[in-house]
Image 1 (cartoon, rainbow, N blue to C red):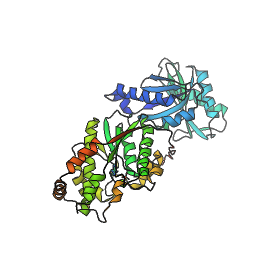
Image 2 (cartoon, rainbow, N blue to C red):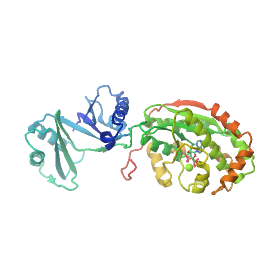
Image 3 (cartoon, protein in one colour):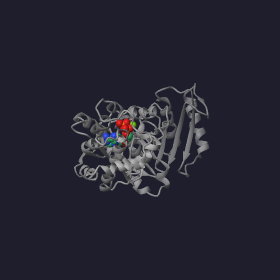
Image 4 (spheres, rainbow, N blue to C red):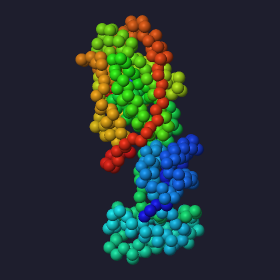
Amino acid sequence: MKPDLIIIRFGEYMVKGRNRRQFEKRMEQQIKRVLVPFPGTIMSHAYGRIYITLHDESYDAIAKQLSLIFGIHSFSPVKRTANELEAIRAAALDLMTTLPQEPGTFKVSVRRVQKDFPHDSQEMNHLVGSHVLRAIPNLKVKVKEPDVELRVEIQPEGTYVFNEVVQGAGGYPYGTNGKAMLLLSGGIDSPVAGYLSMRQGLEIEAIHFHSYPFTSEKAKDKVIDLARRLSHFSGVPIKLHLVSFTDIQTAFAQSNQETLVITLMRRAMLRIAQRLAEQSWALGLVTGDSLGQVASQTLGSMNVIGRTVELPLLRPLIMTDKNEIIRIAKQIGTYETSILPFEDCCTLFVPKSPSTNPNLKIVQRVESSIQTLDAMIDEAVATAEIIELRSESVNVQEDDGSEEWF
Ligand code: ATP
Ligand code: MG
């Protein structure tokens, strides 16, 4: 079957949510943007759904783009026909005879939205089903888990016939749940944390701390590449704040508190991130922390590290296993970049045995003993470089459907 159009469905919130109009508007903008390379298409909005009329544009190419848009719950390629029994039967049979794989079993599910259609849904199930059965001799009806569920929707404007329901990316449309700052290292975790935040409707700006010239241009390029890959999912450019951490890091390294260096660095990062967040009207800080992963991510460390800021700290991966994080990183196309072997500022001065349970009072004492710390933080904020990144095309791995993340 060559589909005439695509039906796009949203999550529950689109129907019931308080910000319904805003969600719908964002959704329309996002979809419109991916349709730019397909000028034959026409988008329309009806009854809490979006329809794309294809006019010979490629369904597969458009479907690939739609599957990346946050807020889309599912979509279906459909054949549209007249609200007339014989036309519906013909479209149903056309679908059943042009499936990529010949089915052994099927069932018909009719939804009659147009109430003055002469047959109710029960009768229609039978009228369409018997027509298909007569034409395809070996086919059987199976109510539970058939090979194909042939769906027929009789709407006032026409009847839609389809069998495929493709899972969308889910979540909320980008930017409909506020804005947060993502602390983006060059590692595997933080791009995934960024992706999950975006999928939940957060607009993000990213911050990366570098220790140039101790860290190289290549390390910076790697983070730029990661931010650009994330912008593929936002559909709009993402701002990346590049912050020099060299002086602060050097001061901590000289403080003779080897076991606390990472704690001190993380606190300074959060303080700077909070300042930049306030400047950008962002209301939260997102990190790639995962409980227990390294010394700075024990509960004891996170308690001491987090106390330095007031904005909410959002840690989408906090309870996620590393294998799962890697799986998502591969799926969203950030993994290969993340594993490039360029040094990060934090890997430079890593102590042999960082504290897993730092003492807040001692940490605060060390901080106040570095008299220039506040000035260095001011300087880091003032000299942050901002670049805007927009995506080119990114290779996103097909979902194998084995997990529930997407
Ligand atoms: P990732 O967690 O992304 O794999 P990593 O393992 O190098 O990178 P950690 O040491 O686990 O990073 O740091 C925890 C979190 O702190 C990161 O997920 C990130 O949010 C933040 N972070 C660490 N280093 C930096 C940096 N140089 N710039 C910005 N954020 C950073
Ligand atoms: Mg990590």
